[in-house]
Each structure stands twice: as structure tokens, then as C-alpha cells.
Image 1 (cartoon, rainbow, N blue to C red):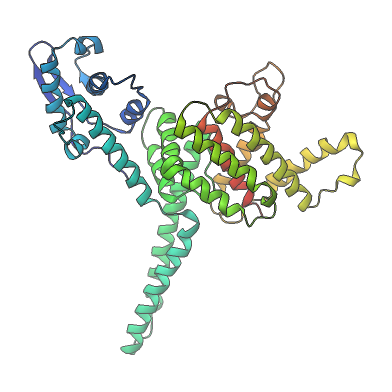
Image 2 (image 1 turned 90 degrees about the vertical axis):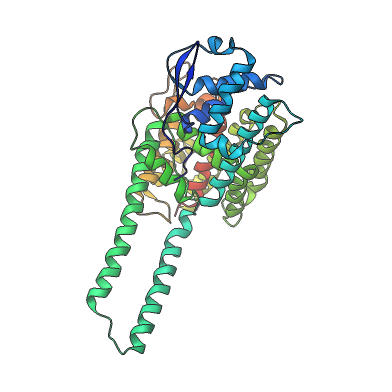
Length: 396
């Protein structure tokens, strides 16, 4: 698992403020720092924000800290750099820049390396079983080869040992996946089939800690899917190209991704406001095509009854059909069903709070498409829509 810090708390004695107890920067702190808006070129304000955020005791206001002389703030910051894991490795003094700009650049340097580290450590779930079987097969082949050379017959005990080890590994994976499923259910998320196992592990580990993990989980998903200019979503869409239900929609889905990339680059508009309704329409359409492929016959019903019967049939086949790849991870299918039937298509009447689903997400088809909700446009709902499409692409 990624470690943002390894040292304990550290202290700095100040004549006016007393004995300052600092903590290392953790994932929650990182979220706050990333949400900090650097107005103009106030790098000193950024530095003070980080230092004040990391003070455990005594309780002092940020204005008290800001009132210190510039010389004092720099001295405290230098000590903070020396004692803080991420700044120790990344702080590089540039004589052409001010001290505060150097501090800001060192943080950005760390955050960039953090994102690269995330990119390196993930292993696709879809390839996991195949990789394990290959490794086991190679190990068995080598072992049997040596036994044959020594004229030794493989014993039952040996096979039982291998089987037990394999079973234990798979059991750990299933437990981690199930733990992650329970946590995500609480915060209105689901695990798409293409997601990497390491993300599941990170989510599962959060479940061992107390407190509200909404921001941590949101950031985890955002970091993973925004990295390398939304490369994972690009790969997701590419994998859908061979699915006949998605073929005629690929151009629309690619346009959604292009819009997402442009808005992130120029940062002058919220692309989620236009992408989400488009993706909801595609979810609706692809599920209609799926229902027809599974035997729904439009010609059997009078025109005024077709829509009602179609929606009933969609719900029936969604609840019945599981994703093809991950029968062991039942919870993941349940999360998909909850998100698409209880939230996206959840019961919602005009000007009233939805009766089902994850209400905090504001991810409701009827409320969005009929213009009642206007604050649905978050990057997290964009990801939820892509995740649902990824699940639909894997339905049997």
C-alpha cells in the first residue's frame, strides 16, 4: 500500500506560540492541500496553510500563524521540511526563486511522483487469475521436471499443499473485494470490472479505520482515473469497441472523453454538466438493446404499454444476469444493481426527495433528465456513469 509518511509526530519550540506539535502529511491532509485554491501567486499563503494544517497542538488560528515575522515563518518551514518525509526528498532550492515558491514546487514535485507511483503499482483484476495460473503452472512444471529427473513421483501431500496455498491466496482476494464492496456501498460507489486490484486493496484497507472515508475514496477514484490524461477511461472505451451493443455509441463515448480532457486542460467550464446527461442516455439506450438481444419483443405490446413493459424487462434481466467475469465477487454485482436500479432509475417524484438509492450523489436519471436537478455535475458522477457502462459491457 502507498505510504505517504512513516515518521511519528515532531515538535518545534517557539518563543511566542509555545511547543508546536506537528504531524506528518497523510492522505486526508493531501486531499485538503489539493483542494486549496492558490489565488494569484500567494505562495507564502500556501506554505502557511500547510504548516497550520499539520499542527496538532496547541490550537492556534491561521491568522496567529500568519502574523509571525517572515523570518520566523521561514525558520519554522525549514524545520518542517527537515522533519517531513515528502519535503525532505523533494525540496530543491532554486536561487532564482523565492523560498515560498521553492516550497510550493517541492510539494508539486512530490504529488507528481505520488501519481506516478500509483500508476506503477496497479494490477488489472481481469488478468489476476490468468497471472496466478501462469505462475502456478510454471512452478508446477519446474517442480515436476526436477522430480522426473530424480525419478520421484509427486506425492498427494505436495498437491494438497499447492492447492491449499492457491486457495488461501484466492480467499484473501475475495475477502478484500468483499470488504471494499461493503465500504463502497456506504458511499455510493461501485467497482467496475476493469478496475485494478490494487485500488480494491486500498479501499479494503480503509475499512479497517474509523471515521468518514468519503473524501479519501473520492480522491482515490479521481487520482486513478485522471492519471495520464484519463488513460484508464480511454482503455475502457477501447475495450467496448468489440461489443456489438456499444459499436454505434463509441463515437459519442469518445466525444464525452474528449470533452472531459479539454475541460480539465483549460479549466473554464464544468464538462460534467453536459457529459452526464449524454452518458445517461447511452446507458438507457444500450440497456434497451441488451433487453431486445435477450428476447424482449416490442411487437408484442401496444404502443402505450411498450415503455412500461420494457422497463420491467430491463429490471428483470439486470437482477438475473451477472457479469461474466467475476462470479465470486457477488457484492460487486449487487453494487451495480443498487446503483442502476435504486439510484439512477430510482423512484423519484417531482420536487420530492428520491425514495431509494444513494441520495447524496444526486445521480438520478428522472431528476437530471427532467431538469429538476442542476447540481449533479461532478466528476464523480461522470465516473459512476462510465462504471455502469463498463458493467453493462460485461453482462452475460
